[in-house]
Image 1 (cartoon, rainbow, N blue to C red):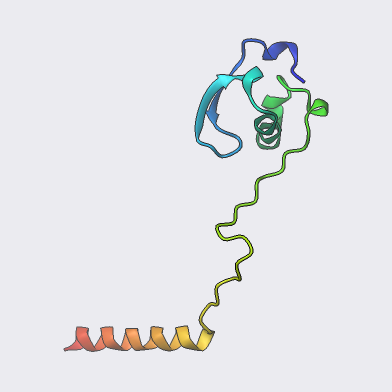
Image 2 (cartoon, one colour; image 1 turned 90 degrees about the vertical axis):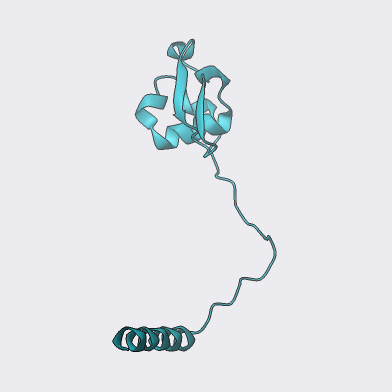
Length: 96
């Protein structure tokens, strides 16, 4: 999975899988991190990683409430009326 250059190489930067800032040897990176690194910066990652030995990275699905119905948004007419009323109130206060 790793090339000869990977031995002793250290990756320093943002975690490719979105975890934050990391500093760790390239050979200690998880397969998910390596696959994501290939997507983000292919030229640099190819020096250290053989992409044929890695499974394709799939980003995790983020859902705060799985299975819950989507929230209903107010209709366009409702929002435009509220905006108009707020503007007229602001104008009246400024003029008075």
